[in-house]
Image 1 (cartoon, one colour):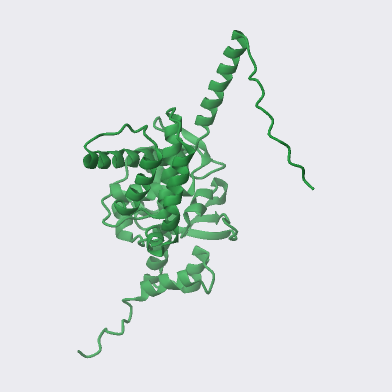
Image 2 (image 1 turned 60 degrees about the vertical axis):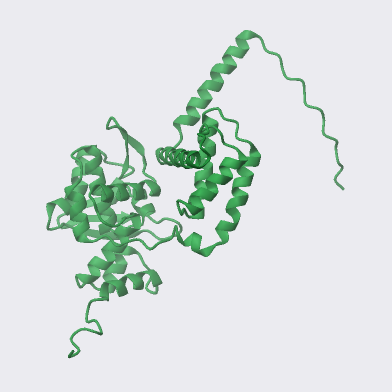
Length: 338
């Protein structure tokens, strides 16, 4: 039987001399700086986006209250209001709202704000019923628009003439031609991409329990959208010969040692499409869907397409792409004598 031990009174705080306090303060500062340095770039950008939305919410709130609250006013009322605003005004998916709560809370604490626990508890309590609403959940699930060859040409024409532009073009062309998931593109290794006389032989790593696969990527007819030339140009410009194939690049052109994340891959593709003025929003999955539909319309066999994409033979998603590609081929309404 477990005995209940009464809670002991807190120990008297230790008293330190001035020299010890100075050393402890320096160690605390070093710890804060280290923790700040190891935050992944994509997480940092995410927090910045969350805080920008927090600013937008405060501006919206000021219009209705005729009073502008400080951004540091992270309370139960403002945080629950933020959840409601994201849901009803921004039409955000519940999963996105969940991340925004975290981003705002972390950023506020980094600014020295003591966010009360009751505020975050109340915000997630307000979020809970939204997570059970299928219509709201679907906001974050919309089927990715399949990228088309015309859109890829449009993106290539808008690519900036710098190291980041060289990387970006190689990245989204590789994603398209290997029919890769964002996580697969993120995990690609330089030593798994080998140049041959007819193109590239690419080892697509296994992710999330899926098996790895070997695919071939042929030279393209158009130099601007040729994945082989794009990869060779990036490799030469970056000097990367081992390790992660695609990496972060900072403002000064320094290349990181680590892999980009799947989220970063999606962001890069979306950003390139937006800059090029592509009429629809393209995401990481747009490249995968785009390759399958484009290849099918070019008359490629189903089994060859599946070899490239890694889909199982009975995959509903794969056959959905095939049906979409075949929609205008020998349509039932075509040439029926009317």
